[in-house]
Each structure stands twice: as structure tokens, then as C-alpha cells.
Image (cartoon, rainbow, N blue to C red; front, side, top):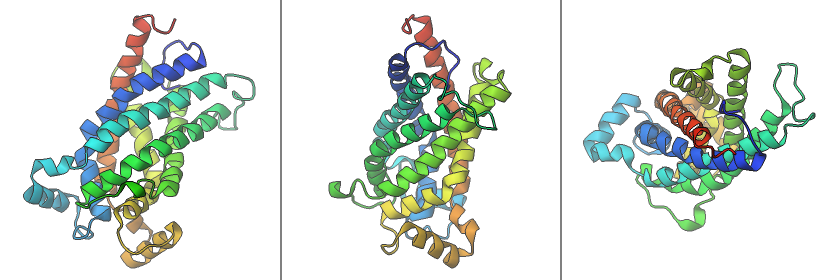
Length: 279
């Protein structure tokens, strides 16, 4: 569903998704890490709680130099290639495997059941791999040490955030394919806009959970449940809009990184077909 190439067996689609998804993940980190660092500092580092995006950027550059924007990048650079390739591999396998009557059953909107099932399975696989990689990344970005025994801190909220994010993403990409099929025929602009917009809207849906995840993994504030933390932050910081802190750099990162990554992955998918590796 995330490419236009002719589909083969479900397991082949999974292996291909695993391979080309690595390019998506590493491209995403290389392009988006500076914006991710700014977002995380705004959300979870003491001393940055009241700074805006540009003040956070200038303060980071002044204290740490340009390298500070890529602090903690090693973990997502390695990890993003793994968990993003896994998410695409699981989704493409499930989507192809469920090419059966009940899997193609359509909701009133035209959305097929297999898109939702694939989204949940892909999200779960991603959360299992991503959580122990996000934890040290967040700790490094906020200039703290991390401990191996805490690597699954925040798994529950990471899973919830990822299900909301990825299901929204796959639903929107599927909708784009059904209602604007010409988009993916463009080698650059179509995939860039489709993936960039779908991912960004997905992040907007789950942003409060992303905010809380970073606080939990960054050890910011007192220990408390997620719902309690959400309510407290909203009360203390002026309402529901406070839960969208860091949305500026997050939006820039998401749109540019996911758009660019999809273009790279689409070219890789086409190369796989041209080399005859689909059989």
C-alpha cells in the first residue's frame, strides 16, 4: 500500500519492506534530528520549559555548538533504521497476507479492514523496538545519564502514541491513493507531499502523548500516571494548548523528514522491481 509496484507473496513484501525501510529510517534521522532535539529540550529539559523554538535553538548552539543538535543521534540513527523498517515490513506483510474477502471489507469511508489491522500490528512491532532506543536518546538530548535497566520506561505510552500515529498515517496514505491516485505517479513531489502531510497530521493527533512520553523517559517532574500528568500539565500551563508544546519544530521535522524519506524509499522499491527481485 505504500508503493505502486506489483505485489508478490506476503513474505516477499515483508522482506522488501524490511530492506527499503532502513533507508526510510536513516534518512528520517539525518534530516530531522536537529528539530527533534529542539522539540525534546522544550518538552523535557529543565531550564528550557519556557523557551520558544528559536530561543531553544540559539541557546543550544551557544552552549553546545552545532553538535548539540545531533546529541543522542547515534541511537535513533541505528534504531530508526531498525524500527521503521520493521513497521513497514510488518504492515506490508499483513496488508498483502490479508488480501482476502474479510481483509478487503470496506468501512463506510472506503477504508479496508486490512489497513487498520496492519497499522496496529506494525505499531506494536515498532513500539517494542523503539522504546529501548528512545529512552537513551531522550536522556542524551536532555543531557542526562541513562541506565540499561530502565530502557523500557514509558513503553505503554510509546505504544499508545505509536498506534495513533501509524494508524492515522496508513489511513491517510490509503485515502490519498484512493482519492488522488495520480499523486504516487510523480517520482518526487507526490510521495513527498503524501508522506509528509500524512505523518504530520498523525503527529498532531498524538502530540500530547509524545509530550508525556518525553517527560516520562526524561524523568521530568514527579512520578505519576499519564492521565494525571496530562491533567496537571494542562492546569499548570494554561489549558489544552499547553499539551502541544514543541509542535513547531515537531511539525517541521515530521514534514521534511517523512517526505524526504518516502521519496528515497519509493526509489528503492522501484529499484527492487527493476532488478527483478520481486520474482
